[in-house]
Image (cartoon, rainbow, N blue to C red; front, side):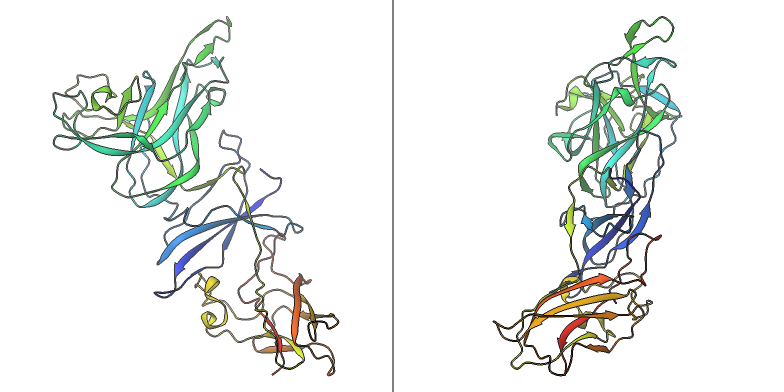
Amino acid sequence: MERGTHIYGASVVKTITSETSGETVPSYIEVTTNSVSNNNYMIELNWESVANGLFYNVYKRGNLASDLMEYRLTIPEEVQKQPYFSNTTTADDSNVSLSSRYTAIKIEPDNDGFCGGISIKLLFGTEGYTVKNTSDYLTLRLYDSFADYVTSGDTDATLDDTNTLYVPNIESPLTDEVKLYYNDLTDQSDEYTFKFKKGVNLVSGHIYWAIIDRVSLVEITDPVTNASSTGTIYVRGLEKDALDPYGEITLFKSSTLVTDFDNWSTYDNVPSSFYNIYTPYYKLRGYLDNGLGVKYPVRRGLKFYNITSFTPRRLSIFVPPVEDIYQVVSDSFAAEYDGLSSETTLTKNEMIVTVTARNGANGTPVTFTETIPQGTERNTRFVLGAANNLFDRVDDVYVTPGANLQRTNNGPIKWSVYDFFTVETVP
């Protein structure tokens, strides 16, 4: 991660009319972390769905007054659903050993959502020991499921529905493989987050499987004798009180990663006629950032139309009326955003505007500077130069922040859609 506190923002690209769509102004929040857990520097962003939303963008910038660069972390249509899940996390009171190489945790989202990662609880035994093979690891990957037609005599896994078992579709993984090194494990139960390099949009009511691959056995060291032995890695879960021969399967285990249902079995220690007695602990995470993803620099605020006046005219900086913001700004960023209707239409930041213009293709460029004060009312015009300064084209415009600004905790400038002006000829 880069140094300093970071500001995160999110916007939604939403439908305006049947033919147009636009991106809202990003809504920013400040995020800090002083965690010392294994999830240090892992930032999670959550929000709920926006009506008519097509997809969402996530932005990031440093909380330093000198850092004016804004970055987009997502690509178009990556985050199509809200990065928030209403699933209730089960309590965990039991250790379930990863006795087989592969263990599959059943995932059922309570709502449509974007999943940036999954958290589970793990630990190793025995208490007080340390891990020896610290460079070894286990992995987690998310898979879709498919329905297999089986009978109770074909498998020791109890059927989810009549003659149907929803098993991991290992031919088509939904995410990349995420590693958790044994060096990060402790002898106490802790929550570990597996962040996907690219998240996935999940659908409510569908069955997914998070498969843990215990690539190698964990080796542990006795703190007294310094002797080494093979340890056991555990995943945490809730032990059920009652047994039902027709319950759903929430944990699978297998020695090999195959699609055939008869190579997977329920995760329990009771006869095969009963369903597994553990409900695994897991959390579906929203949008996650660990500072390692690609950042796309964003530049906002200027649009040149390259229109040449028929006759040389005086130029002006105009703060136009915006009773209907959609008629003033282009469709590309005209979508409504939260709070727009209740915000005053005054400019929110002092802007020093520099305009370079000339008369004719071979004319001499002339530069003017004008200040738009903070709190300027709409329908205000600032005429540039003297009466004899006539031009038919604009070469360049740039804005320098003034002294009176809205800032987030004395850091980045809080620009508003109402810091909007045009450079145009005087009517």
